[in-house]
Image (cartoon, rainbow, N blue to C red; front, side):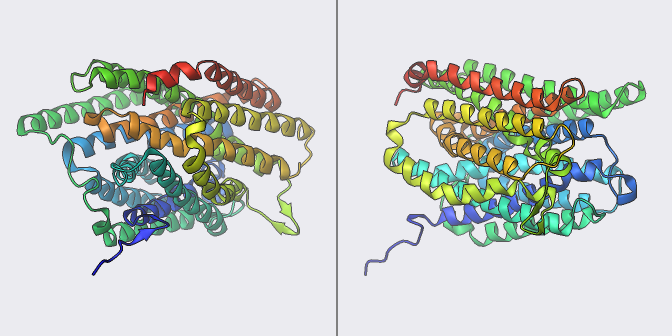
Length: 486
């Protein structure tokens, strides 16, 4: 008797497991992110951290940067130690512990510990779960893989929508119940772990084994290097603290420099690695172009959690048809638009993807994200006299950014999977997220410019940097396509 294999909207059922796991992980991440800068700037009387806006934005930038920076290490752990499947499980557990640490009612060490745990756990999970999505389509046509990644991306944004909607209800901006919101984020990650464990059989062989398991000698060398590195970092931080020159602002700047140095060093390593073939090096040259474009895109896009949240709280009329909206919920315009448009774009890429090259899509994304900050520049002019402007300004900004995101992000995951050297497959998914780390950390530092320039100038300057970069990429589209080969 012939039996048909169970599918998920026409895709392998394993995608349903990864879809659900990522959905709940994004619920926890975006739900917490919706209240983070508001918690950091809230006074101690309301159980907040009492930081100024510029310091909070810088800290937010390096936190989000760390979430994606550690994805490179997470890819290495999967490639060399545990395989992607187990690494995702460990990462989800660490994330849950991070949210629990944040939920402890304390304005001290538990906050910083929680942020560190979430960043480290996200590094273990984020790139590797995307790698397993790609593994489900190893023998499928490229357009089918692109469509699968777009559907997976719908799960990302469904989780984001629910997190941004619900967590600020539990922890509103004018209240003092921040730690209840962090507790809800922990519950979300716990549900994601349950989904992952129950659906593990549907993944078949995806991510089951590391691509290059370390030998005993290599494992011993790794442990020595890890121990020495941790001790060196701790020693540097302690000496910096004891010198009396340590401040959060300087720390965020130092971390941003690290986010710039790491991808430079790693690309240099890849180009020299004997495990990378000559043909793969040519494709890496194309990937560098896409990496830089993505970094510029995320530098602007991810200010939704800092600059745009502050604008929503301070300069926007949040009363919509008699309903008061929390500042942390405004960014849900993006999630709603993604949910509505992802199936449309999935069909577009599945049917017409060959007609619009990937470099051209990245260029369009840069121009669009730049245009969104032109909108914000005009909005900030309208609000410069203290007037609360219509929420339509932020709505328009998020809608424009969403279309740009759909040109870049799902396709970026797919192209990374296709251009990655085989020996560094999981690590290359981590490299894709390094672009986000670099962009977010720079974006956090850029917000400090608001202390010396007006907000309209700030938004317009960033807008022009993205538009110019997009137009430049348009000029070199044919060159990058040639480097990508087939």
